[in-house]
Image (tube, rainbow, N blue to C red):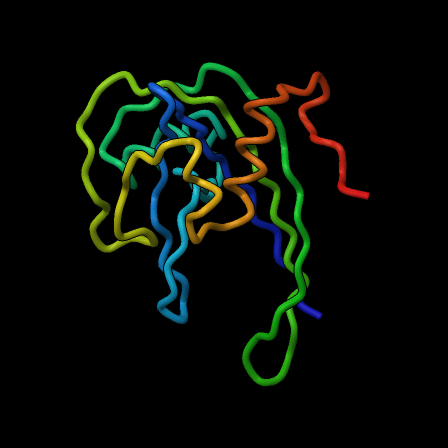
Length: 151
């Protein structure tokens, strides 16, 4: 089985009771909301990753103000020629503050739209699990940077 590791950094930006999200377009064309952010480039600091990715996906200059935590996920999924991948995602989640720029949509990227959503309405959106993880970290601010696993 092919092993894949992806390290990424994301921002939880909350302003006036609203959460900034980017709409991710999956390979099958489905669309779900996610936190602005994405994969680290080789040699890149995760702080710089979240700044770069947030600007690419939303148009905003985002300053990471606090590391909220680290989320680790593992998935197994099919690859070409009947093989499978053992995917491990390591996601660093920062609290981000919008410091400049203007809202715009990403062109030719993995997202097609950026928007602010009322915190109370986020649970009704089609979204990836990372949105819930990020909000839980933002609300709980756990000292160890990890929310308790569901039992």
